[in-house]
Length: 256
Picture 1 (cartoon, rainbow, N blue to C red):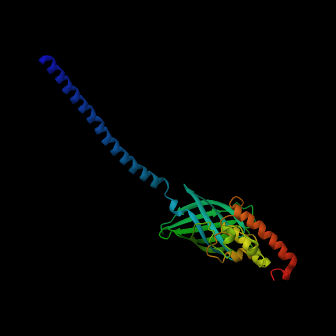
Picture 2: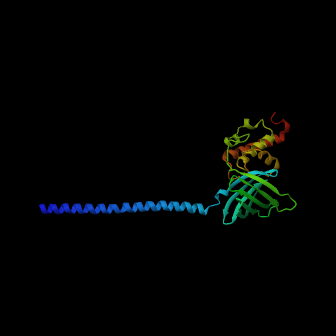
Picture 3: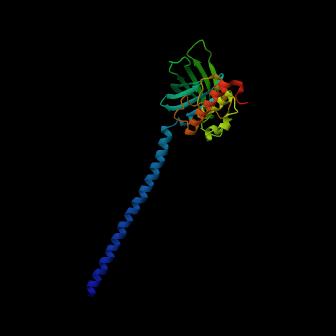
């Protein structure tokens, strides 16, 4: 019995030792895996920085462009190529070109619009690497009879907001008769188009364009907002249109 007991005890101790040795090995591998993961993360960070060195030049730049306001969007830079679009005067035009980095610390872009529109031309754009929130340059129209335009634009991100404008309620809630019945036709037209302006709509009509371009919150961003209007805004637009028609029919008697 004593011999049997001794054999059993020896076997238990041997199994325990073997288990301890086995549990040591995964622990060693875990340390190696953690080190490898940290190393991989650092490599990925470096690779990301190398593969997208032009991200800082991307974005929307807004400002005066002759008598209008322009949004110049630099959307993609790869290799020596640049792609983007300009939104001005009711037109949304793509452009594509090339870029170079000068020894003066200025990033230069030369880009051309398609040329199948009477207002197309060529952009020469510069960005100082120490002042990334501003672009300056010149636009030369394809039509040689028209003058070139110089510009300085500031970086500004378009943001849809319902708390801006003279009648923000038209984007916040359904309008009532009391909101409209005392307004003149011109006011109703402005209220209706203010809904579009909040979505960054670039107006063809000069008088509307000039009115909204005076507003700091207005950023021309698109010429097609069909998919962006809310249900509330759609219903309010239809209601305002009915009152505009009524005001046009009754002229000076309306709203008095």
